[in-house]
Image 1 (cartoon, one colour):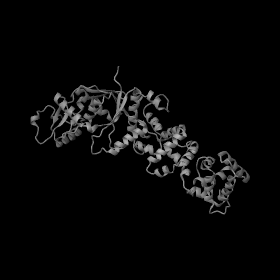
Image 2 (cartoon, one colour; image 1 turned 45 degrees about the vertical axis):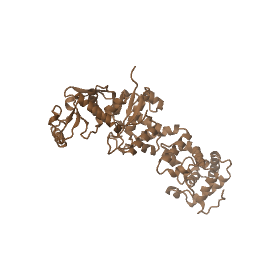
Image 3 (cartoon, helix red, strand yellow; image 1 turned 90 degrees about the vertical axis):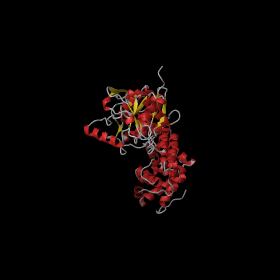
Length: 482
């Protein structure tokens, strides 16, 4: 019986959880879940100068918001430094590593010479077989891997296929620095082994690291996990993904109003395919996801496709779920606290009533919030420039007539409101829009909104007529206040 699948997501806490990292986490999570395994989370915080608690918090929060749950406690790499040093000493004792006393100046000279000669191997191995008694007393040694000098190092990658490196081109990499701190290469191997990781799924920018790490595994006599190096995400133009393309933190997508299931669905299709299927439930993703279906070419990020997919998820979401999601988003946004405070039980019910119309064309939660601005607005409703231009004295006179018609509407329903407005338009020989547009401007402060009759119904009779009256105070229009 094969060992249970164990994957890991291992970000560095030097910044936000970017979109590429989120996809890597998703792929690890799906692969493990689909095989009854576990996905572990390891924070690779050995770069003490750049690692921050704020970045750790952003990573954990981003994964939680996306719905990617890790198993067990979060593991912090720096806390395991003693274990990493222990393994380096073990390799030294077994003859698979050696002390290197090369000075910083010597190492610089070696690198410069290698570059001049076009060699990829930067270290010349001068302390590989040298008697340590020749060591200069003033230099603290690093510990280097005694890598094989001939043959090749091979990885049978689940995405890239067979990848081979000639050992003559690979350095004796440093395992332990002269100050006693372990290097990334050593720490990753020791942690993956001790955590029981069976599958390493990560970006193909780590492919060269795989060769060096396999040499460490081999020196220790440890089993090498199955590896899958996934292509990076590029921009729509094929260039490296940048902020202008969408290389933002997961938190930025949250703030822009994307739904977690939609973003998960979009990310899973970036480089992975399952026939022609585009829409996946979480259960379908877990069941279908496999490594050989990941392409070798970089995936291209497409904001328009993400927006359209998010719009699909919004339309498929229950109205009450969207109100809850918006409530949480407003509390999350730095500038959303004021709006969140306005979500009284009455306003929440209005929001819920308006949601079928609000979500129909929305691509993000921000679109819904923007479309519902008239619910949050304080009276008198501020008018934008186009609404101001629309409400001429003539339009206000018509608005006054419309309000008098609406006073008589009982019960206050969108159907009854529409009938009253249509009667007025027919009596005046006007198109319906000529009556509806001044109403829309007065009620929402804009010339675009959800259906005007739905707006009137949601606001209620007293509020609707009150907003109309606010716009008629400077006009020679007689209107009995509601």
